[in-house]
Image (tube, rainbow, N blue to C red):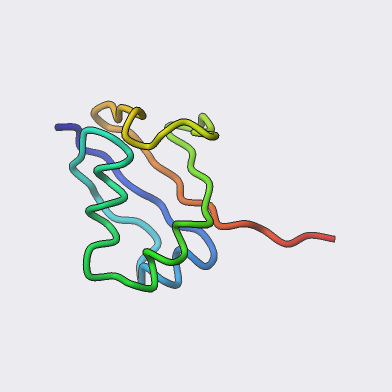
Length: 83
């Protein structure tokens, strides 16, 4: 099991109620299950989010296939409006 930190941005930060928190998980899928348990607002937000693991985009890969290394940083990025 890897340990690391997860950082929330914008709407994800608001829904989580914290800017970052530590985690223990093997895959991104497991991490998403853990962080959204009993956090309905965050669960709704992360469905629209993109993710970076140690600065690399996850893209369309299945979250259960994204292995987290020890000391990993996961960024949760909601869609951004621009103009």
